[in-house]
Length: 439
Ligand SMILES: [Zn+2]
Image (tube, rainbow, N blue to C red; front, side, top):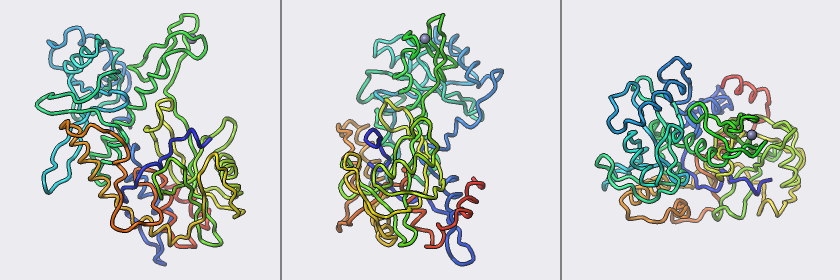
């Protein structure tokens, strides 16, 4: 199952999101403190600022009324009257959002921003792709009531390259994974924009892979401003909802010897090690999926399974527009490793000290700045390649034996939470359980 999973761990690490870890009286960090700080500050792609409260259908910011407004406006673009709420659209091409870059002089790192466009510009962009804009071209993302705005996304299908000059800015389409690496994790605005782009990409990719009804084969059409679809066959009318693929990701722990099990896949960059992960199968609980995947891939039997946190992951393959990573600590009952070579390249126990060194070594900030500069170059039209290999620019003078994924990936936080705990802290399920109730 792991083979079809585009893991978080194929990426280099950034750094810790300001880890507001508290100490208990004995001076040890607590699981609950770590978990709480995590869920408030991080995971990348969570905390979408437009999604928290969808307005009721009588509200002008609601999907229903915003869509009705859109329908009346499109025929009169660009001469439509000033709107309230106003609309902004985020164009995508081949799964890549439109962005622009600012800053980036000798002393500062460039910053990427989402390239929101007006309805009129959106119509123009679609026209360059030979598409007449209709209300069904756009997908509702959510409102910012305080700014009198409703946000939409549009898929330009074939459009590519630099969209030269919109509103005096140079814009370009950039891979979401590159934006993820380039996002400054201490900047709430950047993390908000990343979450919006992730949600938009997941919805648009889902629209692309759900064009036909799974029951009768009829074509599906958008409903509720693109938030779901419906079969157009009058005798069927099957409702189709955006797809989410749940994945368990687990740090397997050897309590007795204070070690964690890390694994490598052949497609990882050299020396990268991460958590085990795999898809949940129909008819199994999360705990069963953790135990089964660990057994299948490494031959290790797991007993206690403790939930940690979860992360939306909209940067997988387009056939799976949004995975949901469900993170666990899994406590080993047996220690002998028998690697399934079809699934993994290797799996080994690592001491807390070694994992700590791996975390300390990786130059997460450097990777972020490198990716941010690359986006600036792409927007200027200088950098043509969007190859991911250059995102892994983590090397410094010394070669560390291993490093682990960056703070945009839940694997990073599972591993660093374990490293930061005292040897005694992860033994107590009760203590971990407390952290769940406080989320
Ligand atoms: Zn149908």
